[in-house]
Length: 148
Image (tube, rainbow, N blue to C red; front, top):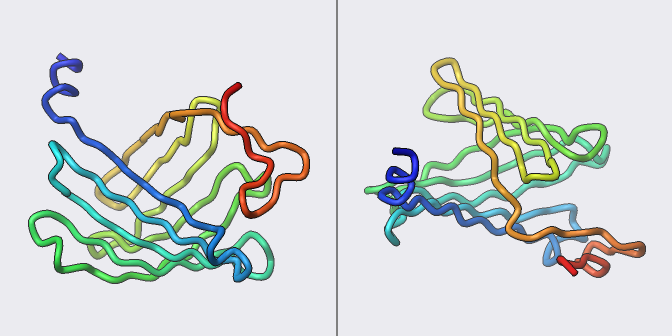
């Protein structure tokens, strides 16, 4: 049944992360698009600004949902990078309440848990390819290599 459900829904999550173009400002641009059968169901864009302490960050963004994709809701949030740098916690406005989101990088992919007063979700995004940081890696992506 799960296989049939996956075949019928065909949900696709596409995301981009751009540090290089604004990295000198400790700024990251992030976009997300969720679609099914080529139809956009959700679209968001965020700008994440890392504070001087190297752990705290602020976010601003806008998100829109099908069928009113032209009406984006703007929001502001905050969070902190984990001490080991392999995760983060975010506090994001979500449908009038505060959502707490935890992320953690694992060998299998990115684990995400999201909790609100009325919901809880656990998601695992699987790596499509493995990235390794090589000695001398730089903010512009130099030193990152894919599978051998």
